[in-house]
Length: 345
Image (cartoon, rainbow, N blue to C red; front, side, top):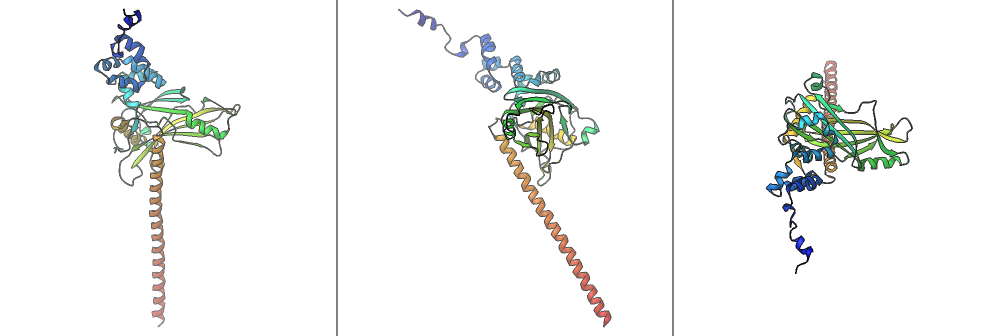
């Protein structure tokens, strides 16, 4: 005679797929993060249907990027084809735009929305939504830069003076992460232009401020040798000691800019064209640990090589000018010599 326990276990579902849809959707799928939910959606048509519920993706987006709960962002996401699921697929993977060739004269959309989130040790530290009007002449032809912290404000960091200054740099490099999502509400596309993990951290020798840099390399006009052959979208977070007591650190500046290979700012028209191309045609790939820092190093090496070539060309031109001057001087001296020689005879 079978035991009661074996009899009851006979009626239990043998696989997770046998569970009731409501249990799956409310108790299991809600515990998954974005990549896991996307994987579950590819398991079967039933899971694909259950995973398509927008509320699941809305919760994931708000947990990953608190700034997405802002009404302006919610309004923009509501126009995406699959709302939060489409938004997540645009902004979560690592953006790879190195092979893009962009039209720097392309007409920009009328508005760009930035959703910015700073985390320290995976805990939200700062969130801000900023809208940029891209139709004004001031925007189109001025150096492109977006700031989301008022110069009078600062955000305290949980790092105090008891830590050595040298440790601050390592602390921030390891624990401070940044996300900068750019949204085109007209074309319903978005992209995360930050590398999430810091690629470069340095301390200013005079002020003591620490600059934390997050970058994405993007294709420019693609013309070999031009200063916009490739460009760098740079998110910069500047941290410093609080002036009141000097014991506590704070975030003083969070900005985004696009720089060419000579470190010069692109203007608003060029930058919005590149960002538009990145949102529409940029590849979304799975992020590998340390990959962003490796790409930053490769880009810096390209800059050094380009500068070396430019310096060699300039040195050659300088030498040519010197030799030309010497030749002209010698020719003039020779002319004067023969002129006086023949006139005296």
